[in-house]
Image 1 (cartoon, rainbow, N blue to C red):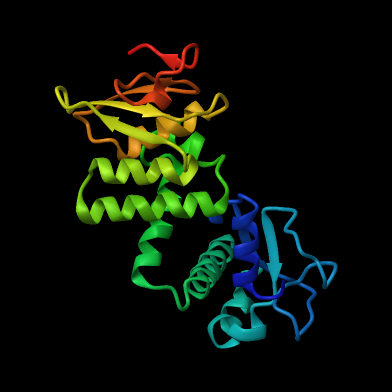
Image 2 (tube, rainbow, N blue to C red):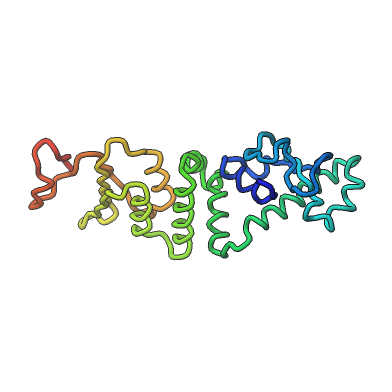
Length: 226
């Protein structure tokens, strides 16, 4: 972990928000390394203050600033902002416009921009799950909310889930999960994000409801009454 973009990616992977890092110019540093950790092979960031050698790659930007920075708190904060901008740009290098939007939605959900309950549940997901949910949410923004989006979100976490829609009351849905240990917080998050407002869902956890003329659903002691 040598460059500022590597530091940013590593701390993000560990759940640290960018704004919780403060970049500072190291007083003692190697001219050959951008990071200025006590150990050159350091792979974790232990504190909010991250010392770096800005002259390694950005001397044309910061060389004059460093002469005045030691006695100016304003310039130290300006330096931190500048490094954050450069590091963020480098992490986005080669990223498509769509990926940029997905990352923006991902950060918004983590920060609670949608609602507190969504943020709390979203933060428990793996990085891959977070990216999948954010990608699907972007697709919903592009095409509009629909039952298809809700179904797709369910199958991200529960591939065996089956969603039924009643003919006589199409706004009523029956969701069969086939599990006793499904995470209710995740299901609620998916409803909050993807279920169109006009629909109501009743969940069947482990036992399927009986369907007339479908023998597999009419086994005694293994069906729910609807």
